[in-house]
Image 1 (spheres, one colour):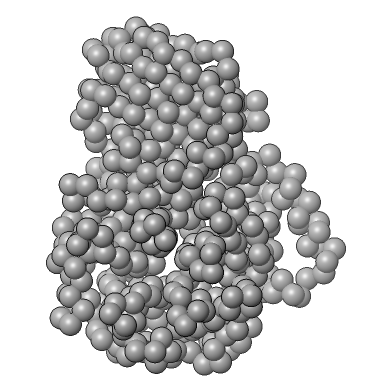
Image 2 (cartoon, rainbow, N blue to C red; image 1 turned 60 degrees about the horizontal axis):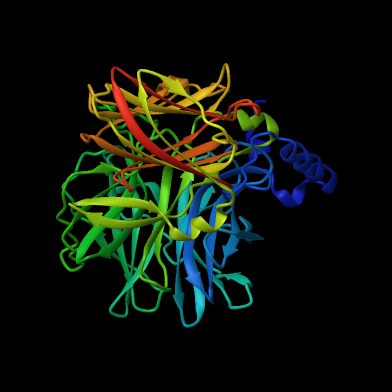
Length: 489
């Protein structure tokens, strides 16, 4: 179905209860609905927003077009949790209902101030000739969950020298002063981030562009997120327009980070190392982080990408969020590990320990459609070791270690329904090790794979047949020994 502009900008309030009910039934009948990931009740989910801990609960908002699997008129949808694992849908948090966000409540962040949660976001508007004009807006949530918008933008204009690609404010506090980074595009169509300052969270002053070592790195930087850990500064952002290079930057858009000295707020400069991708898989974008009460830095990303059609489109919905990941810094890189609370999802456990010599094996009870799997491998003299999962006679998704190229490979060539193949069906990253730990979270239509306790992560949507529940282990060109533990979820 080709959506017209009028359909894309229809408000949920303008459709009938009958139409919404029919869409809900269509979504609920989809075989690829997730079991343990945040997903939209209907329509399209994208960027996570306003990720925070407030009033004793975790709050997570996301971009939402409720009426179909397309990027249309965006709302903020609100979900909350006490443990980052079990999420309760609260409902619409921010509606695009005034002249400053008339064409969408776009991405932003949240911070607690005077016992309320302040939500700073980009209001998208379109002029008669369909040119955009962004406003940076604010809404305030009280302890009862009520949300009120501030009646005028907190930043009304785009600074000179930059285009109307000016969005996604990320707010934080430092010694009583509030700062916000906003993703931007220079007039020469290169990406950057701009710094703002406020003493009261309402009145914002433009400080200037943050000077980095990436002066010509894509045409737009979306969803910036700055934080400090272990006396180092980390800037996460999603640059658009990065050309593929070897195994890197294979997706339509990328998300990654740079680590360096603390951001110099006075000089507006950030001295840092090289840019690394956060996720080496197929479907990951626009991540957002927060610090929890234990001091952990937690990340959640959008498990999807713009401008790609997904198999669930035919069922009236698209996309989900990743599982929360704890971030730490080791050897100048971010390490991502699934948060420990996810272990509460574990049900019955199955284990196997074996050696393989140029063979492929299946084991009793090592099968399923939703599970957690940890497999530790000693490569010995094998040239390749792999795990085929969500498999049957036709379908299989494969994660493997190729000792010849010293690379981890995720292959979804035969994962089921084909989509996004324009950008390839394999993702790879280098890893030189004789011992490999694969840690998989497999849901109805996704997999998240943590390699060697988070040195690398691969996230992918997969759409296999419902009967595809085999797990097979194999070696090629020699012998391996391994042990595997699987928990049903």
